Amino acid sequence: MKDTGSFPDYHRLVEPTRVHSSLYTDPEIFQQELDRIWYRTWVYVGHVSEVPNRNDYVTKSIGPTPVLLVHDRKGEIRLLLNKCPHRGNQLCAYREGNRASFTCPYHSWTFSNTGELAGYAYADGYEGASKSDFSLGRVPRVAIYRGFVFGSFAEEGPSLEEHLGGAKASIDQLLDNSPEGELELTAGFLQHRTKANWKFMLENETDGYHPAFVHGSVFQVTDSGIGSLYGPDSTALTRDFGNGHTEFDLRPEWRRIGKPMNWFGTTTERLPEYVAAMEGAYGEERAREIMIDGTPHIMIFPNLFIAEIQLFTLQPISVDETIQHVTALGFKGAPDMNRRLRQQTMGSVGPAGLLLADDTEMYERNHRGASIRDPEWVTLTRGLHRERRDENGYLVAHSTDEVPQRGIWRHYQNLMTA
Ligand code: FES
Figure 1: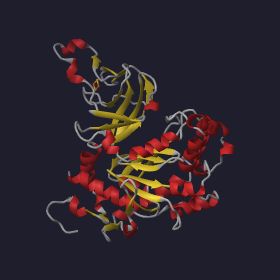
Figure 2 (figure 1 turned 45 degrees about the vertical axis):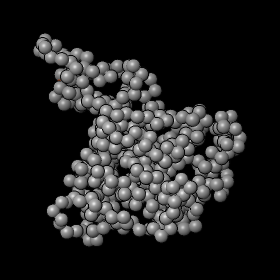
Figure 3 (figure 1 turned 180 degrees about the vertical axis):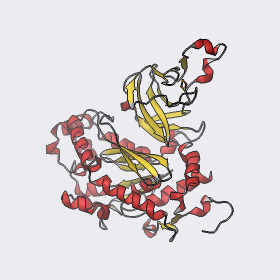
Figure 4 (figure 1 turned 45 degrees about the horizontal axis):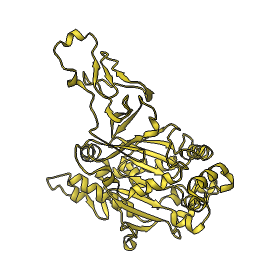
């Protein structure tokens, strides 16, 4: 690429059907992404079921920045920055807990879990100082959609619901699979540290072109019928919801097969308690429809991936390092289903799991490849000729087409040039 004197120029680096490799490898671009994406747009942080009681907290992140997701003493959900405003020490080193206040280990300043400074050690040294000058930093906008907690460092901007747009329907679809319409994330998180740029994961989560090859051995060993969902004859769709949110929609295939719980690789007979609870909650007909459709496979920009049975969050650490945090989904009122969700999650993305190891190998190879000088561009043309609008106006195409990747980069360019 020729130097135009205004590098990085995101109008030139992102084209409709190709992107420049430096977008994955340039540290300067990564720093700009923090300002223009991670510290500006809505970012998923955690779920209310992780902090069910007053004074519960979990440590989370927005990009590389650590935050505390707190259910405070007054009953509010807050996002506080995990940094002592005295001399900048990391305030809380635990992953989770229950406490009404946080005490900094360095000089023992204590903060209420609503963020205010409660007291100094040896207070006579602060004669005349105002405690209100030393509150914890906060994420200024916090919003919750059906239990999913998002934060934005921008004081103003689109509402969370505007940001989610069509992706809300996929979250609704997910929660329909709970007899009580709620999620419970109680299985704990695994962390996978990956030596690759975060956008390789963002793009791959709804890439239907790779599974038949990257995961072919897993499908073969487990004698799974999943492989055909990602083949040329599949009726599944890729979808671009706009705002960077993308989906791999398997419902056309599940509806064609027409068997409840087939999406989960099982039958209603093997989950009698769950099926009874679903029928009790929704009635036989609607429960059957829900259990045929199953759960969504959606990547909510920039960091929330709901993968049928798991939930991932992406945490970029640097231009070439990302942590994937993953947990099993759990549905309120569905203990037998939840046991299987945990088992399948361990089998696929646990420490000895088969699926994520394959993907991670690809992410790291992607990153190494992006550093090679020639060719400079990554091509995203697949299925361009067969893109169309669905009944809701969203772009869709065949399950193996690159509709999601083109949609992600369109949104990326909008954010980076805003
Ligand atoms: Fe926290 Fe001093 S750095 S009390």
